[in-house]
Structure formats: structure tokens, C-alpha cells
Amino acid sequence: MKLTAKTQELTDHLYRVQGIASGKTTMPILAHVLLRAQGGTLSLAATDLDLAIEDSTGVSVKEEGAIALPAKSLFEVIKALPPGEVTLQQGENNRVDVRAGKAHFKLVGISAQEFPALPSATVQDWFELPLKELARMIDSTIFCVSSDDARYNLTGVYWEPADAGKALRFVATDGHRLAFIERPVAGAKFKPVIVPKRTLVEVRRVLGGQGPESGDQLVKVGFSDNHAVFRIGAVTITSRLVDGQFPDYGQVIPKSSDKLVKVSRQELGEALKRVSLLAPDKSFGVRLSLDQNTLKVESQNPELGEASQEVTVEYDGPALAIGFNAHYLLDVLALVQEGGVRLELADAISPVVLRPLEARDFSAVVMPMRV
Image 1 (cartoon, rainbow, N blue to C red):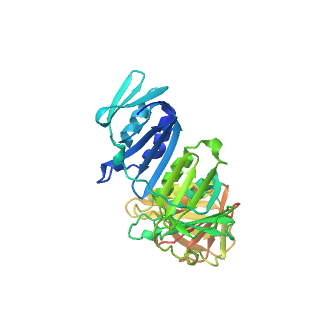
Image 2: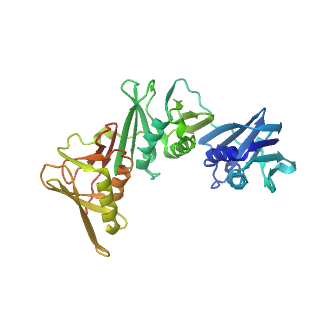
Image 3: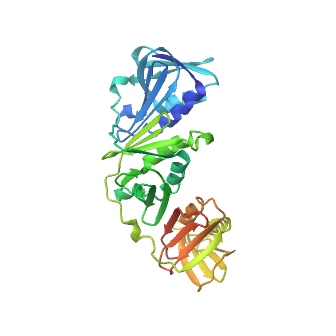
């Protein structure tokens, strides 16, 4: 194999694939990226056996061939090279010369024949949605995914069609909070599935690397019995699905919340950040005390002291005090792009529902806590 590529383009493509290659494995080959030069194309692939990514870019191929190189080292080397072009040439004993200007590296690879087969899936029905829509839906839910492996069915985002296939719904929860978003999508007809968090992290990485001008680019998505497939330009990501039953999230969302608070997202966020500086380290618990058009945010820490700040709100109801993890509320506020949010409350022991004042496609539910 011998090829010449533009350094920055090769760096960008390696960035997309190297995140999947893991050095924390008993199979050294899984820490490698497979390079295959054929025609005028360089194909790149990485896998951890459950998740795989394939990408390609145009290069000048002088000798066709394939080899697996250590993903992290190759990415760091190419990224550090001077601007211009880089040449990769395969030699004896699976060694590859990397040259750019006066810089010269020799990387030790592994035969391409030892690289594992990539996961495959047969998809019957595909649907498409704009890149910026998928990115927003992932951002709006992935923060709620559980990191507890014992609750395996909560370690991904639940995807389900809505409105007879004319809309797509994402739901995620870790048992303490829940996020829900629904967007119009044509042809979203599939059985509900749970897509692993790690898969969506890698999908989001690729989406973010497409550039600001690609927001209207369409992403193709399809499912088989146990796999999800994403096609983003020249990139294909294939992943196993989470094998589990997602809980009935409808039971978590309060059916009636008669206390409505309207507040500036920025003002509430700033108050929570300041007051949580003295909140207990593990729980980050703060108390929200509501009264006529006033919300008081308070925290107490026996070792550090106490803090409070008042925020002007729109509220015409009885006095109410309720505790929350400040970080959970801040995570939701960070996703709201509009100027205000609405808090829907019932009592001191029921969860709060947060929604943007303008957009109604996104909701978050946060469970209360004792403070």
C-alpha cells in the first residue's frame, strides 16, 4: 500500500473513526483502524465488535493494499504533521512509513487479515431526518441516560415512532430525571428500540464534524432485529441495540400539575450556579421556595455555610418549598435556547416538569429530593 493524502482531510477522517477503537481490550486488534487503499479511495474502519464505523476519502493511490494501524497513535501522528500532504507506504513486517515534509515516522501495524469482520445488518425500511434535527434530539436526551450497568435497559435512548410514523420520539431516563423530545419525521415506521449511549456519542461526534453548512444534510437511519445503522455522508455507523424493555415512561410524567411558574432561563440558571456553590458535595441539593411572583433558591451546608438568591417569576399560587439536585436542573436549562422556561409543579413530593416557553416538543422531568 502506498498513498498520498491531504494531511488535514486525513486528520478529520481519522478523528471520526478512532473514537471507537479502544485500547482497553484484551484483543489488541480492536485498538487499530483498518486502512484499505483501492482505486482513488482510502477506506477507514474501526470496531469494538458491538459498534463499528466505516468512512472513506479520496486520495492518490500508487499501490493498493490494506493494513491495520494503531488508531490513537496514527491519529496523533497525522494531526501533528505540518500542513500539506502526507504519504503512507507499507513496507516489510507490517511497518508503515509516514512522511510529510521533513517529518518521518515508522508505525508498526497488524495484517489486515487479522482485523475482525464488521457488524452487518439487513435494513428493510429506512427513514431520513436533517442532521441538525438528529443532533438536537440526541443532545436533548443523552444527558439523562443511566450509567448504571445493572439497569441495562436504561443505558440507551428509547426511540419510538409517533403520530402514525409522521414523528420520531426520543426518551431517556436514569431514574432520577427524564428527558422527552418529539420531532416531525416522515416515514419513521419501526418497532421501538433502545440505542446505546456510546453509539449516540459516536454518531454525535460525526454529526459535529460535518461543518455548520451541513445542517440540512439528511441522515439515513434504519433498524434490523438487533442493529441500528446510521449513514451520514460517506460515514456508516452500525451498532447493536440494547436488548431490554424500556419502562413505561408515561407513568413518570405527572398527569396534573396545577402550579405554573414562568421564569427567565438565564436568571434561574445563574441563581442555581451561585447557590449550588455551597450545596452539599454529593447531592448538590438546593431548595426552591415559591411565593407570589418570587422564587427563592437556597442551599445549606453544615461545613461551608449557606447561600440564597431571589429570582422574579410569574407565579400566582400558594407558597411551596421543594428540593432538587441543582445540577439536574442546570442540565435541562442548558438545552433551552429560548429566553424562558416553565416549571409545572403539583406539591413538595412530586416531580417538576420543565419545558421551554416557546417550543413544546421538549420536556424534562426531575424528581424532588429532601434538603
